[in-house]
Image 1: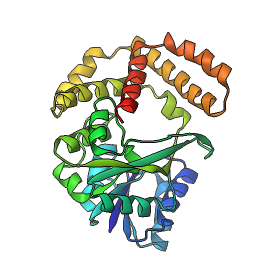
Image 2: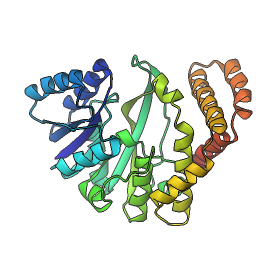
Image 3: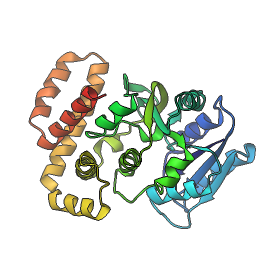
Length: 305
C-alpha cells in the first residue's frame, strides 16, 4: 500500500478539489490518502475534505490544533501512515491519472529507494506554461547533480517508508526541507532516481514567482549544497547563521526581479517569442549576480545529469 501525504492551508477551493480528485482517480488503487489541514479555521477546506472523505474511505483527514507549518505537518503525516511506500502531493497540483502506477513499477523494477518524475508547469487556470523536458535518472549522476541544485521534484516523490524513517523525517531547514531531505538520504546511502516521464502538473502562481523569500531560499540552498559537496550533512543552526549574515534587502529585490524575468523568458521560449526572449535575456544579465549563479548551478546540474 502507498500512503499519499498532503498538507493543505489556504489553497483555492477549486484547486484543492482538482488535487484531491487527481489522487482518488488514480489507476493504482491500493493507497491511503492522509490529508493534514494546517489552518484549523479554514471551514471551506474542512467542508470540502470531509465531503470527499464520506465518499472514499481511503481518505484519512486530520486537523492541526494550530498552524504548524509544512515541515511539522508533513512529519505528522509520516507518523500516521501505514503504507509500505510513501508518496507526496501538494494541495494545488494535479497528479496524472497513472502517476502512482507508473512510478511504483519503475521503483520496484529497479530496486530504488526514492524517486521523482517530470513536472508540467501550469498556471492558476490549468493552462500549460512549459514542461520539463527530461530529468536525470542514473543514481550516480543524480548524486553529482545534487551538488548544484535539487533535481527530484518534491511533489512527485514516491519512496520506501524506511527512507523517511531512517532519515527521521523532515528537518526544520527553512524553505528547502525537501532538498535537505534529499541530500541527507544520499549521504545515508539510499539510492535515488527519477522516472523520466511526466507524472504531475505543477501549479505556478503569480505569488510563487514573486514571493519575497526567494533570495533567502537561495542562500539556504547554497549553504547546504556546499556542505553536501564535502560529504557533510548541514547543520540547521549554522545554515541559519550563514543566511542571516548574507541576507539584505537590496540583493533580495534584485534576485526577485531576476526571477520574474527568468520565468517570463521560459514562457516566451515556449511561445516562440524569440525577440522578447532575447530582450529579457539581456535584462537578466544585469539583474542579479546571485541569480546568474543560480542559472550556472542549473547548467551544471544539466551537465552532470
